[in-house]
Length: 307
Image 1 (tube, rainbow, N blue to C red):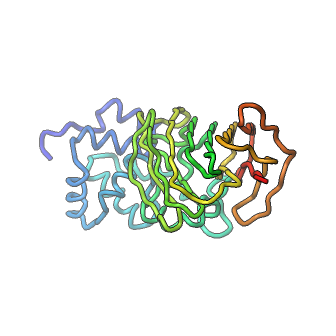
Image 2: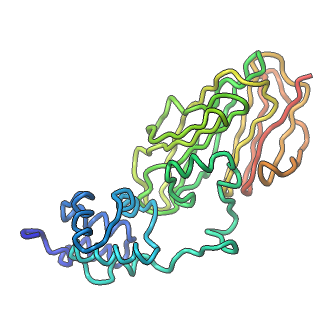
Image 3: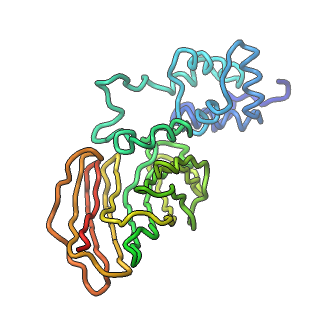
């Protein structure tokens, strides 16, 4: 590749090689070389290494990292293609993540497939990135229940914190009981990415693409509204948390008659029994308010009786 700058002489590259991440070094080297992922894929093929453009994109943006032997071989070929020092990219990967039944990606967390069992095929179809790259700090949800006692709208506001570098999206999982799947609309501070839905199961998985790419520790806010088609009489609403949450605010507003009783509850998972707390008061605002702080992973919600 004649005429290309010598990357080891690049001051920013030297800084990233000392203090940066694998994704940052790879992204910087690609930008400096002016190589598209398609061209990189072609050069790797010339070295006898085949890697999909999707995988290269995920590595570049920190959405996944190479771990298998074949992927590590590709990384060493990338060092040659990008004129990087030998083992410079490999050394930034660190030890492989623990695998197997006895290992956990991080403490105090629940695999999202346990909390969203009906969404597994949708997550697989989306080739969803790991769930540990961005986490919610605060979740505020406003549920509107129509006079017909059916779910009308859900307004959601999320305060998010990046756990890794190069985070540019988050996933939203929705579920409705015996109703067509819903998709977020009226998005603020983000835009809609890929969507996968199973209307028979009332399940949706979609990407929200953030307005800005986040480094580890940086925070942002996203807002959206979900509108629901006619369905069964609503008697509960909950949120499923795969990680600890700083604050969860749930407001359930009733347009028609208010329930005769409304109680907060917690569950370890969708199949576990509900642990109910003291009833909540529903006043002149016709709204039940639940505020939970420093909550552990699991399910938190409200249940009510109409008559």
